[in-house]
Amino acid sequence: MPVVGSFEKAKHYIESHEKGFDSRTKKGAPCITISRETGTGADRVGEVLINFFAQFNAPFTLFDKNLIDRVLEDNALPQKLSSYMPEAKFPAIKTAMNELFGLHPPMMSLLHKTTQTILQLAGMGDVIIVGRGANIITAKLENCFHIRLIAPVELRAKNMETYYGMTPKEAADFVKREDEARNKYVKINYNRDVNDLTQYHLVLNTRQLCNDEIAEIVGGTVVMKFPERFK
Image (cartoon, rainbow, N blue to C red; front, top):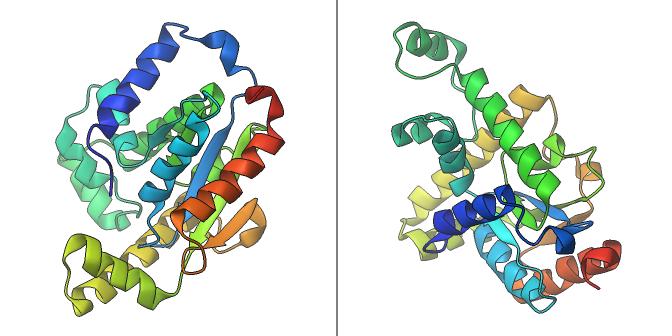
């Protein structure tokens, strides 16, 4: 669940970097990407990681759902288009019809803009990017660290019940549907399998580890891997 003001924090991050703010302390600044199964609490993990890095005077910014808001804002696109950017691809016939009648910009155009934004953010560093195939997009960038969050489906469904007030059936259906959508998004757009664990530095089971433990593991590893940033 995104924290209140997360979009404002994202905007401040971009504006600060556009002005060259604190550029000297950004040398070797890392980017963390989080790929996740539905219901593993990636946003909450991201926030705990931000608190972890704060002790090193390294202010990180989380980009999750606010990433698409940023893309739309940068390209002067209406916010209602966010509904056209789930982590799945529309069937080709529906996409073609919508584009033909001007209901939304070409999906590939929005995907391209999202990719550009992710590369820009990763290049600036001190960011945590959730989803959107960010680990694939940034795979060749040396400052990026990729993690995957997993958990048993029963636990993930229970989390959806707890945090979003869903019934057991609604939660189970939602988890299944979202997992399939995210898998298709990555497969169709990047021809990769999210379950290929060789593309991640760490795979963490949120059933076995609490958020604080995950932050210690991920944060501690990032500090060791990018020591020039945390001197």
